Length: 200
Image (cartoon, rainbow, N blue to C red; front, side, top):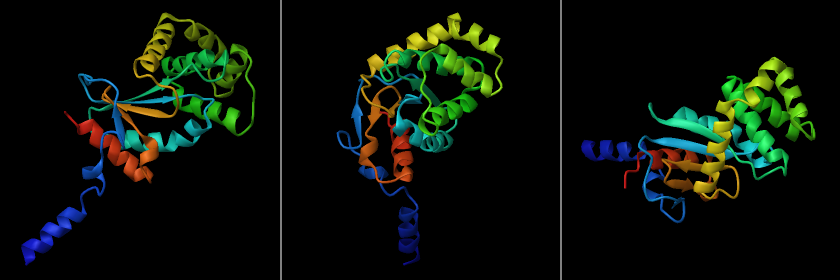
């Protein structure tokens, strides 16, 4: 009897939905070959209100990942008209300047809380400066070889995984999460970690 009770308690401590995640419902296979190392990529845009609300969820996913699993963000260029690419460039610039977290928070706030409109790179530069970054550093980084390379890679990722809406989460370069298939943040975190560990 004691063994049965212990077994039941052990089962109750397991993630409730993990065994029930199914291809076609909770995730889609977007490529047949997985990346060499496990990784999670979040596709987003500063212009996307859902991405703005998804930020704390993304942080929970990142914090939950096993050691050695990378979490990357990929700004898409297809939202915002001509400013779409400028916002993607701004994200890459913030990454290079190691101010991404502060800059992204300020940019999301400016767009979705303050209703600020952006018409050019100078408007973006002001956000950088407002967060304490030297304008000259912004100018130098935004046209650097590294930022241009990051921008090209983000556009390539968007096309490779056929991303048409954001936020989108791709795991191991093989599985795209159906975020609408889960009922809670906890279940989404479980789903992402299930896919991270999936090896078939």
